[in-house]
Image (cartoon, rainbow over all chains, first blue to last red; front, side):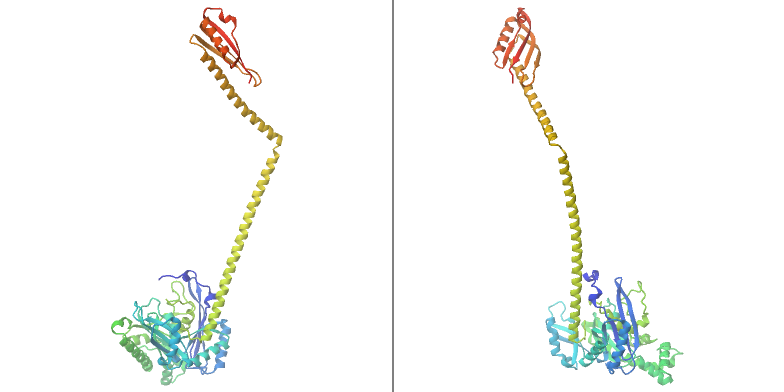
Length: 364
Length: 182
């Protein structure tokens, strides 16, 4: 791959303004910071703090003062100023828009004008950004541009911005979780289209990534907690015990584990059905000339992706290769360095890692 | 890359970046200027040292020249001049001697055989003298040779003793010629 001048003379960190990646969910705030080391990266700091219930619900800050206090405690602990923050996936709107070719500086105005046609928010009530995905009729002078628009309700974004500013942070980036996680788990040399399943405690995000960009993203309100709840109800045990059993036994189909397997199966099947629905929809639109854009594999990430037997179950049911992600694939070569954060644990940090990596990332 | 930060915050971030860019640029410019100044100072020091070395050298040379006495220089030059003059004059004398011999040999007839020349040239202010001896076939041939020599303007005086004419034939003779002063 051709190297640029900046590969030989990288700009100083002072100019790059490296930021800590903060992954905010309803249950926790995960932080992760990368630092440059010998031409590669190493982990500077990482961690997770459980967020008391009720402060953030479905991605929305419900108790702002408590949230700010929580952020302040993290800031004191980290001693950093700049942060890249994830915005809740379930409140995001991602849309692919085809517009006539225009100058780059005119694109925002054009999209703002027709925003309501593509997402259920008016331009005044939304904070949006976009990226040009591809030009139609590649090679010829194209008449149309394919543009990804990501939008969030303005009130939600302002709320996040105010909270972080009050806590003393300077947010540099607000980004959709799927974009952040894809940055680290999609190998940079990957040519095929992949279906990413990011399973958290309360929600699961699906994303289709190909040609080094986000093609589609969607979130369902099923997550690791649903497995726990099923076990709590059926086995009459505590949430903690249910969590323990889930991690220990998982979704493994065996005589010893038949009972647990049957309890967890409906939740796993619901996730599988959603994945199947999206893949069928996507692939059906990619037949013919775009056949190479069909989904070639499923990549699992997120803190709940470690569920034993889940990859095998999904692979068996969806007839596609399913593999756990490696969030270090673009960051650290294990031949050179073993990161402090193990592969399994790092699955839960993919978003925070992607956010931190953004400070150094150059889109090719 | 997509960034959902509100526009006003993006502007603040951009300003912060530009501020840092200016600072970094300024810092590197300052460092470059400082290095350039240091190099210039170093070069100036080197040039100054070189200049001082040359000045010292010139001073030493001047002192060395002043050590040479003026009289010594004059006598040295005179000595050189006298040597040059000597070689010039010797060259002239050699030329004169050869011209005299040439006149004598051109004046003599076939019957006259000269065996020996003796040239004595004194200091520049004194006259020179040339003597030669030989054998003449006849007295008359010798007589006419001597008369011819006496007619030559370049000779001051041609002296042929009487004893040269005692024999009729196969006459051994000895002639001396006084030359004009320079």
